[in-house]
Length: 563
Image 1 (cartoon, rainbow, N blue to C red):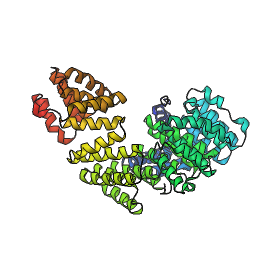
Image 2 (cartoon, helix red, strand yellow):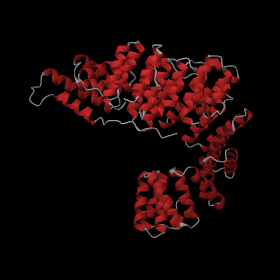
Image 3 (tube, rainbow, N blue to C red):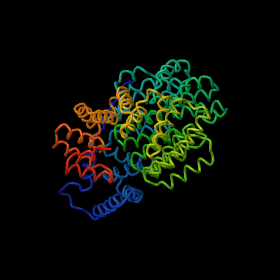
Image 4 (cartoon, rainbow, N blue to C red):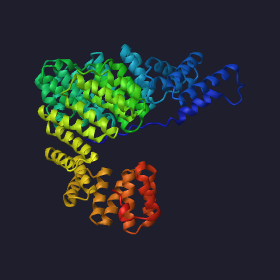
């Protein structure tokens, strides 16, 4: 599949410059007492924001907006705060104030569209779509959303895939939109023709579409079609849903595709794609829009949680994840994300408490033991991690998980054993992972690099890393492994070549910089070597700092070579 199209995102600079102008007013204007009070309240709100008191800041902005509904600065800050704090109605109010001033940002008509769509106010939804078209950046959504309006109105004449095909960006989403819009409008057989192509490609990106379609057919009591869609078990969610169907619990996840679900998914997808482009705030906007269109929905909460996590709002992210119940096929993914959020905040006791409570409810669910292992790894308890991963392997083997799933569990086990010093037990686990899934670049790279670190089985280790690099030459980590392997076997010019390529992909990575520094020194490029080591020291763990400092001062010796 083609790469996700880059969505043009305007800089916020112009918007906030207009805010500042709105605050101070024309230079010649005499500042009134009201202006001074507004400025004072604005400063209070900004101080609250800096102090991490986002809700306090939002409350001040909200009060100020009541007093000054036409003030573009206050409305803009209220909008941002309302989105960040999940206050949908306040965000809408702020956008309407901004609209009256003629200063809509590119994404804002999408909020107005969502509100009109929910109210079935088709005249207002059409106005919002016209504004999206006029503002440009998100105009590609218009033919997609017009189709969903037609489906909501039960008017087949308003549905056209040609308009989506004609737009370069919209056409990237054509397959998934065709499937969902056909399902929602009752054309299941036609939807299946496109869906079977999606099933055959088996791409991870299309997993949510396969899930929505499978749940639709479960709701229609067409379980065999749902099982066909999920047969490859490409993701954890698909495996969970297939297990639910086979155990007679599929109805718990049944969900027909409606105009609201399909429209919400359009914004779910956009949220994810904006997230990959590091447009975190816009990603959160789209997740909020989707959540309000679809209401209580497990996938929507998952997307919303991820968007909050990307904006470093762990508390709100966890609240979203916790709304996904154990009867949802997204339960394991949600728990994984929730635990990951705790680990990211270094809240290890809370993470362990949460996962232990889940294990007490479902002790034989292998995925929960994997999460437990990840918590132990996060806190540096590799023996505890290995024990948890070993339990996961045992449970998954007994439950006859797929080879791909078992391979990932053996990789986790092998990595924890290797980190804890349990070698060669770690090697045996990594070899088992490779046996189960012989063409995994991640497994091959770990298998090879772990042996290179120990300077053992160098020939076999290099063969594994070469194969990994052939499978994924774009990976900076794998390219680093290959370059370092060439260094260790004495092919230093080759080492420099591959390590420079790796550094281009990850310029701040301390390991790559140190490896490249060692290689530069060995081929006589000593100035560049010291520069690479200095860069490595900037980003390295404290435990590596002394070795790097010695190399910077003394140069490379056998004792100071990178581990």
